[in-house]
Image (cartoon, rainbow, N blue to C red; front, side, top):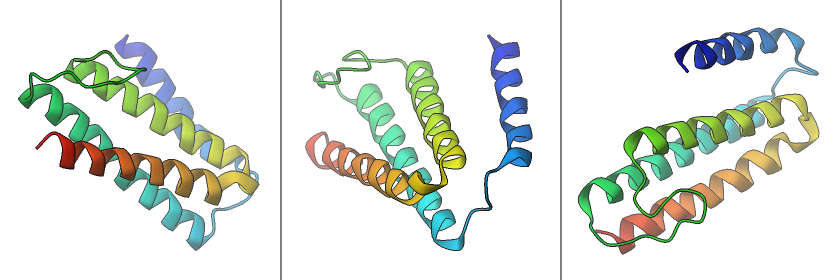
Length: 115
């Protein structure tokens, strides 16, 4: 498992050489927003699972995923979103702002609902 993750990480580093076109400043801001919102969603999901015994509806993760499952899920989905944005330049800004907004909504919802 560790060797697979290491291979994927190294492969991702080398893909930067094959970019269709460089990222603009606006696209980098969108990527920063996405990463911030995605990280906040991961943090609130992990915090809920560690501090609440209440069940939480999540159709992708179990009702009480482990921290390892949360980390793997958010790492993979974040990497896939950035990879798609990297290879499809026309989708960069809408994809990153859209997916980032969804993550921000769920992070805020989790924070308010499961205090």
